[in-house]
Every structure is written in structure tokens, then in C-alpha cells.
Length: 411
Image 1: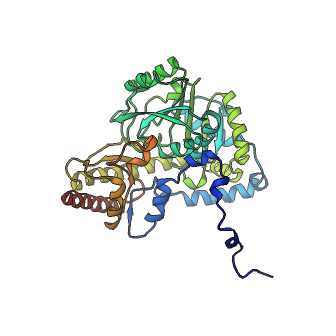
Image 2: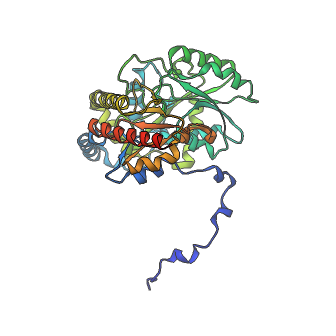
Image 3: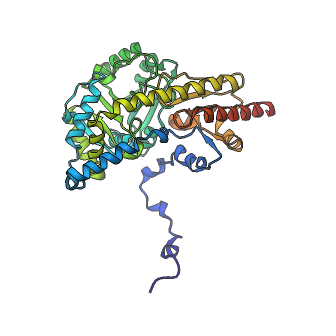
């Protein structure tokens, strides 16, 4: 007999919190994930998500690649696979990284289920109670979310227009009782939009060697450069102590959940062990399909197209900010990537102000979400320019500027 009432109603009064591990007290929902629920409303212009432009997703290329994979190697593509990743795809990734002078073998790679899993695996291997993590202020929210549960202790230095202020690191390092991790987003920082200069990269590597630091180089946006010259990756400069992360989420599609870790071979073996306990391996089928797309040479043309589109959208946002923002508002001018960082008049607290902004049908991510230990960013916000077209961007910034001017007039 089928029950007339949902069976779980009988147990809704159980206090599950008393059964959870103590480390779950440090787990919090992603501010961005929660915001996306709000911004799914069709009349809101959202600059909140870190979303690529959906209209340029290579749907036809993936459709053709799926058909070919199923026709030529269907049983293998639908079977379990090696934890390390599909060998032909790993060879593709090595070839792609070689363009940026990262010369490694496939054995130096582990294919992961998105960069977020790579960050979590780093947490599993390196982070425990009071582990020192040195990062920028602000820094990537996803890294904080991955490592908070492992009880990390953060030591942060501010950003300026040239990236992390590495000259402040010696004072931080004096406070550390044991070596730590140095987390860096050198290219088109999320959320800051800045690029770490070559001089600062040189000095950062010098400090890492002197103080026995492990460098985590997170580089999801490196191929999305719209002006200026490519700079030397930290992995190229210090391969013996750098863990390099990148992804196909920004250049192909985030729904693939395909990324990779590059590291010395002994460390890859440990990452493999950690991944086996999580999901055995990244999806075999999507790896086969991605390899088929890459083998066609399509990605080179596609990245050129993305650069053209995103560059135009970045320019539209920068021009609109100049036109519509109130006085005492400042913003980064990124050379690439998907984001810029806005520092507002101190009278505007971007957390509570978000409610007012949504009444004007525009949304962003409040700056405090990107600060370790939630210390700072109260008058800052992150804006995404890759998702919306130019006209939508201009209208959204107009709405945001109008809301800010009204708020300042009221206060």
C-alpha cells in the first residue's frame, strides 16, 4: 500500500546538527550560489555569477563530438576509467600548457571534476587545524569555501592595481610557526580583476623558496587575455614547489566539470589517492568528448572568439561605470578574465545595499564574501561582464548607479 503522506514527515523533528562533525560548523553556503536563486528572476540584470556567455557555448561541436565518441569508442567512453584521467586528454592539456612555457609530461597531471574539486583535494592533502594559508585580501570565494571545513588559518595581504602586494609578505611570514601554502590568482584575479606583475612574481618565488612555501597557482582565466603580454607562470619559475590549477570551464563550458592539477609526480600520486576516495575518477564520457573537440583544433578559434566578445563587454562595462557611477567610486581595469572590482563610497555598505539594488532590478556580489575571516570589503562589490551583452551591461550599470546615487542622497 502506498503511504498517503510523505514518509520523511515522520522524522523532521530530529536535531541533525548534534550528529554532525565539528568541522561542519565552519561550512557555509556560497554567497554566490544563494544569489543565483534570486537572480534567476527574468527581470533582474545580474552581474553576480561568474558565468560564461551561454550563447557562445559550442553546442554543435559537442553534439558532433558526442556522436563520434559513441560511434567509435562508445563502450570504452561509458566504462570506468583511470583516476589520473583519460591519457589522450592529458596529452592535449600538456600541449595547451606548453604554449605558456609550462612543459610537463602527462604523468604530472590529474584530471579533476572542476577546479572546485582540485581546491578540495588540496584541502584534504595540505590543510588541517591552524594550517597557514597566505592569500590576497580579497581572494577567491570558492577557495575559502573549500578550505574552511579543514580549519585553515588565513593570513592575507591586500591587492592593488598590480595584484597581491608581495612586499608585505615578509611581515606575515615572521608570524608563521610552520611553513604554509601561498594561494595566488596571478592572471585576472577573481574577484579583483588584477594581474600580478612580473617583478612581483619574481619576488614571490624568491620568498617561497626562502621560507619553504608551497605555491598554489590558480589560473582559470589565463587564456582570456584581451590586452598586454602573457607573463611567466609561477609554475614555470618554481616547478618544484608549485601546484598549478586550470580548467575548461571558461574556454569550453562549465557544465563539463573538467579541470586539472599540475604538480610534481610524487605529489600527483597523493592527489590520486585523495580523489579515489571522493569519486574514483572524473567522468569518462566527458573526457572523451572534450578530447574529440580539442583534437579538431576548434578550441583555438573558439578562444579567439571569446576574447573578442568578452573584450567588447568589458569595455562596455568600463565606459558605463565612467558614465553612471557616483563620485568616490573606483574600479579595476582588468586586462582579461571575467570580473572587475568596484570600491564604493564608504557610506554604501554593499551587503545590506543589495536589497535596494534588486529593487532596481540589478544584482552583484557583495565584497565581504571574498574576505578571509569576513574582515573587510564592506563597501566593495564584484561585477561580472562576460555573461550579458553590451546593451544589457549598460542598462544594468545605469540602474546600479541610480540606486547608489539615491542611497547617497538619502544618507
